[in-house]
Image 1 (tube, each protein chain N blue to C red):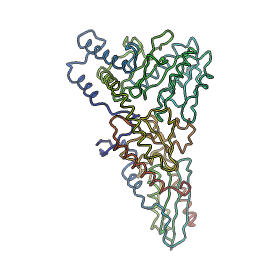
Image 2: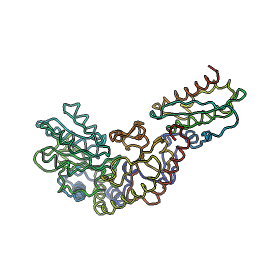
Image 3: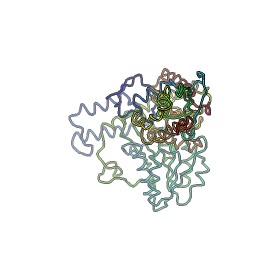
Image 4: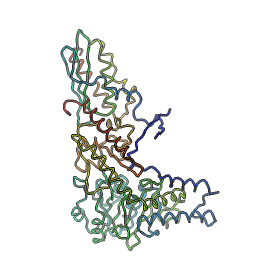
Length: 132
Length: 392
């Protein structure tokens, strides 16, 4: 059965769907050599929880992986964040603009807390790396 | 911009049913082949034809309900019927007392009407369900006092399919001289109802919940002393002054035919729902952490509502596409709050948030059920694979 639906009625845009289904940075707990550092943020009972592990080598994030519980926007966001982090020089981490996600993924206003959660993740990473 | 959704599998029939092709044809014929659809209130020939069609439909719906046609009032749908029944009956009996009773798990169309009454000087008791979603009759007995004039308890719950014992509830109300209204939007046309035998005073019906058109409903009002409603609208003699306004002939014709078809097929449909329910649950029950929400004994089998631990309901819905299901009721699913119905059953936020409602109709196929089983299993496996340690 085929149905036509106007795009503005869709709760998720194409990028959100792509990132949600991609799962490229899902943590399978198999890492290349190096010290694994982890960040855990959020609250399962409140519907959002992120566990991000990364390996830093020679002032560069060589691996970023996640485990996540939450809505499609949460899953898509952490997939996007890992993509942004992985391969990036530590000094460039400050250039990642989490707030851009609000527009990129068309995150609805009632999910604004997601942006704050991702900011918390990034703040923690920066702190761990001595950037703050 | 248009998005094409291919291979949609529709298992959200509790939200709205696909219109029966015969019903659609009858409505189209009503719109297409008449020179003019008369105003049923007019005494000219098209008007008389329109009124005739409306009265035929009224007979058809009355036959499905096993009552007299004169007890049926047309409305715009179950929401209006519920409002008219609850607010109308409370006002009708306000001189006798101003206490009314309902349950916490009612549809918002009922709860909203009770909220309105509360703001307008009525005392409202909202009874909790047990963990299976059922009313404890002793709670109701205890809640009724001298001032109580109306009890409204739904027949089949729209989220869980849990079926209340309306015979027992109605009998108690009748014994204590209290009016009994039931929102039967999810049961009429799906479960046989014999209003000539049931102790029900007011009953709300919606056409689109059983293969009829959207935008049309009905209210059954028992013809008896002390049973009545004060209108919500004024300005016309239609529907015995109770519900004024020009009647939508084509919708009523469609509604009547849907009722006629339901009466012919109801036993077969019931059996089909039971088979779909069994097949789906057989395919899901072995998934760790899954549980049915609501009673499994006292329920309408056209609805299966399940919760699962460690899974977000919104992500699950997206993973299930192109399966069309619901998390929460259709009327409640645009906000991200966990279902108040499941919360009233004692479910945690987490359990309520993961809930998915599957609901079937007579066009559902075994193949579609199998697709649902496969997609649900696959979705749960994936979402657990990406879940944090704490949830594994």
